[in-house]
Image 1 (tube, helix red, strand yellow):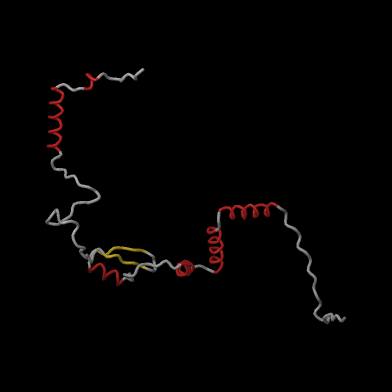
Image 2: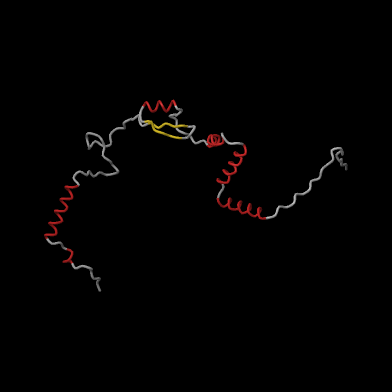
Length: 169
């Protein structure tokens, strides 16, 4: 038993009139899209006089130039020489921002009080902790909060006037 096609071969063929109409429609579409230039995105068009010359040599362009502000950790582009000089006068530099963790830590903690620095350090440790360990730590903290506080043991006080005990064999 052979499978039956949905259409018979005669139904798939176009008539001569339909072919002529399709060709007229395709020609009108080509005329409408005449202004559109197609190009390959992998090799975009270049601004060289010879289209067969290839990519061409590297050409240095001074601007736009990226400037960095190390204090605020920002980067901006200068579009011309005047903008670059104005940014230099405002404290911007041509040297990229480096990621040194200690410098970043010092910059963040510069305006904090001692208690705030200690609290920030605790939160920093908690954020760097693996999730499993953090979950265990939170469970222990919740359990300790639920238990009543145990009384503090009494400490013995040694009188100051009493001489130390000497043991002999």
